[in-house]
Length: 349
Image (cartoon, rainbow, N blue to C red; front, side, top):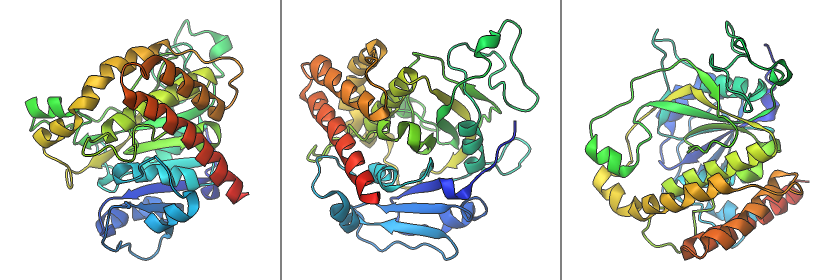
């Protein structure tokens, strides 16, 4: 299956947590140079950003955030600055790659084009209603297996592409502590559709999505201003991924996981013990969150991603708000996110 990439339909979002992006940008030059880049400077960063010449890019700073959205309870600091990029983009496709990630090499030592693979995932159908044991049937050399219903082979639109990474695995702090030297070296040349009503964690480290279909469902709901030293970034990513999966399931859209890989460095990260101190409250909350999301069923009246987020926020407040007040604040942030999405969208118009 072939398709045309329209460079004008793509924004690459880079959350800049490091002042010097020279090495990062140069490593990606062959793959980034034909697209528009939105670089969001971490609002807590004091240094000036260093970006090499030759890229079509726009930088957003803390002052830009204040001008565009004013005062908000949503905290866009740290890794969550990438969400501001999702907000201000007007393109159909968003590719999000963190600034400590570099192009990966496949087992034959060929460098991989993560941007092209995300766009391939998003522009070929997904199959969430019946699992194909050969994974992605639209890949060259693959097809639907014997017994796969012909009525489902047309698939549905893919709205979310969740890439993986080599080197630093996506482990929580407790797992990092017991496996401090473990590195991910396994490159699996496969893409699969995540089945209907199956929850999954997702990460904005290496992500692609169709902004027109599910943009408002990519929610920084667990990044709340004034939360002190508790680190919610990891919870916020997981919360966001489950919200997005619920929306995709309800709207009959697909989610893919697997290729593309990036190579993730370790620079700038906390050590495992320090991360555990910061993340532990969030780790415990996961035991409340997953059963809730597994039970969510949205009403038929929710026909857009915005509708879905608002309905989920009501359920979060009712079901989880009594468990911990942080969930009530997360529900408020979800509703505020939809308001911001609509407000910023109207400014663009």
